[in-house]
Amino acid sequence: MSVEPAPRRERVTGEPRRVRPLPRYRAQSEIDEQTALGGAYVRSLIRSQLRAGLSAFAFLALLAGTLPLAFAALRSDLAVWLVLGFGAYPLLVLIAWWYVRRAERNERDFARLVEGRPAP
Picture 1 (cartoon, one colour):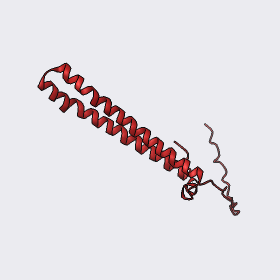
Picture 2 (cartoon, one colour):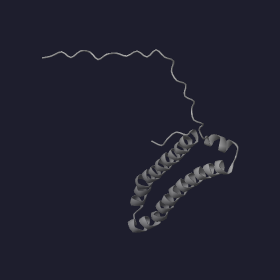
Picture 3 (spheres, rainbow, N blue to C red):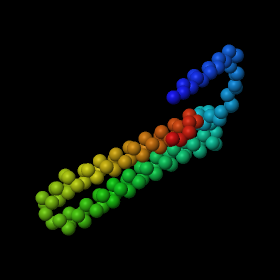
Picture 4 (cartoon, one colour):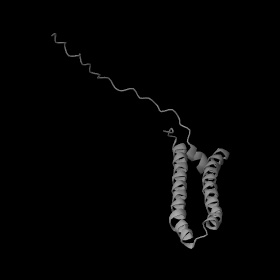
């Protein structure tokens, strides 16, 4: 078995080069100065939040609209209360959970856009 020599270590003693950062485009200044581009950024956030809200409302309307049909089909007071107590509320919680996650993701994406960070 042969022993290989350790790799040679280099020492850098010169001053590091100073690299000027490239001027970065800042979406924050566009929004603060209320330019047309900044307005477009804000409108896109508002549109995405509105789309999420209308989607959640549509699911809620679909759920509430089908309840009378379910009650008519069941024809039992006990079954109606079971549907209301154990069927409707979990669906409402699921819709609310989806909406909150969607709204937070929209805000996170907007903040990432404004800060100039790349999307993951």
